[in-house]
Length: 335
Image 1 (spheres, rainbow, N blue to C red):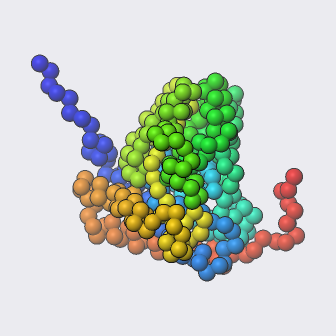
Image 2 (image 1 turned 90 degrees about the vertical axis):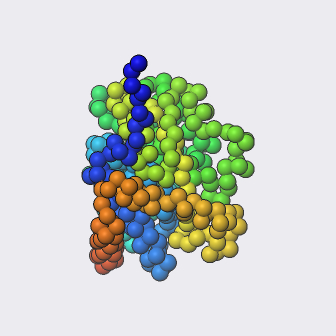
Image 3 (image 1 turned 90 degrees about the horizontal axis):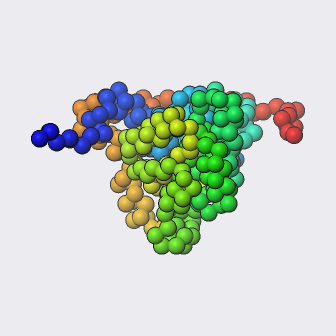
C-alpha cells in the first residue's frame, strides 16, 4: 500500500525570504495609508481620497505574483495597488499634495495615479473602467504576441455594471491574458451586498458561466492571496485565457475620507462589525505566520516596522516641500 500523501502546508512551503518580503510590503502599504490618512485631516490634500486600510493583502499578494512587465489598472481605491506594483510613497504623497513631482504631476489626485516604469498604467474613478482598460491591454498583448498579463483590480459593485459582463464575454471569446481581481468587501459606498443582490448570489459563479476560470481566496491572508495569484498567473502564462480571482476582504475607514464611520455618526455599519474584521487584520496574520515559521523574532519585526514608518514620514515631508505645477502648463496634455 503506498504511503498516504500529506496535505501541503502553504506556510511550510514558503521560504523565509518570501514571508519577510511580503510582510515588509504589507507594512509599507499599511503605514503609508495610515500616515497619509492622518495628514489628510489637515486639509492640505485637496483631492477626494479613498483609503484601502484593511485590504492590503489583496494588492500585495497579487502583485507579488506578477512580473514588472505585466500591467495593472485600478479603481478609485487605488493606493494599495499603486504601491504594491512598485510605485513610491514619495510620488504618491506628492500627487495627493498636488505637487509637480507627483506620479501624475499633481494633475490627477488620488484616483488618477500612474507609473509606467513599474507597470501601473492608470487608476480611474469610473466604475468598471479598470476592467475595460485591462481587457484592452490584454487584447494588445494578444495581437502583438507579447507574453504579458494585464490585471484589473475592482470592487464587488462592478459586478452590477454592464461593462463587467461585456469584458468577461469578450475576454473569454478572444482568449485574452487578463487577470480580473475582485476585492469583495461587501459594500458599494454604503450599500451592503445584501440589499444589492439576491440572497445566495455568487459573483464567481456568474463569471464561470462565461467559461472563465475562477479562483476564490481569503483576501485578508497575504499567503493565501499569493498562492491563488500564482495559480492564476501560471494558468494565464500557459493557457493565455482570462482568470477571475475573487478575494473576500474589508475596508476599515469610511468610503471616502480618513475617518472611521462611527466617528462621524454613520449607521450603515456598526463599530462592532468593523472591529470584527480588524481581528482578521492582514498584517497581524502575516506577523503570526512569520513567527510560527521562525523566519524572524518579535524584535526584528518591530524594527522593520519602525524603519518603514520613518522612511514613509520622510517621504511625505519631502513631498510636501516640493514645488507646485507651473500655471502656464495648465492646458498641457489636454486633448
